[in-house]
Amino acid sequence: MSRITKFKETKRGKIIIKWETKNNDEWDTFRMSCNDDARPELYNALDELAKDVVKIAELEEEDVHKKISVKGVSFSYSNDVMGAVMSAQKELKNSNAPLCFPTPHKPAEDYSEAGDNPTLPQSAVNHLTELKKECWVYIKGERKQMNVFDNDEVEIDGYNGEEKVDFETGEVIHESKVDGTEKEIPKQEETEEEVVGGEVISENYR
Image (cartoon, rainbow, N blue to C red; front, side, top):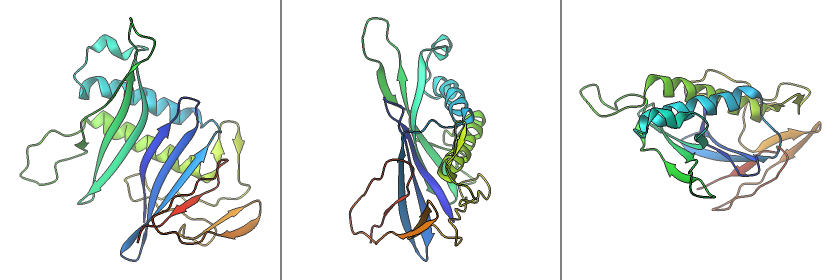
């Protein structure tokens, strides 16, 4: 079982994705950082999320047109319920830099049946689901007008936060395959490594 935990697009367009894979009773954490452009579907999902941000942040409706953009999403999972915080930017008339702000954390549905807490709009849940789907496609190697891998090394199994990632052996814990060769990624303790260009990086916290 695997799940996306973070998406970020930097100023220069670099895409950073973090995800977790269940390893017995622990979660192994992985990080990808790549300069390749994603498929248009990913950017479309971000554009749609900008409309949701206007509702969630209780902004003016006219702000949605060319003024709000979503640059990142942090996902949480509790009791099998997805939650999210979106990092957004708003253009300002009298400033050279945008206003950067996070949305309040909200779950896709209430954590308890008897609860009556604010939740994400259904449109936001749909667009977040689409974004997670495109993150898995990006990890798989499908980018704008290109396919990094010749064979399917990642299997997308559902888009509800329970996606399974398959790198050659059916697991994405300590191995990745790049350019036809297998490479073992050693376990790390409290460390983080980054390889630019689409190679998967393993972060293990024990």
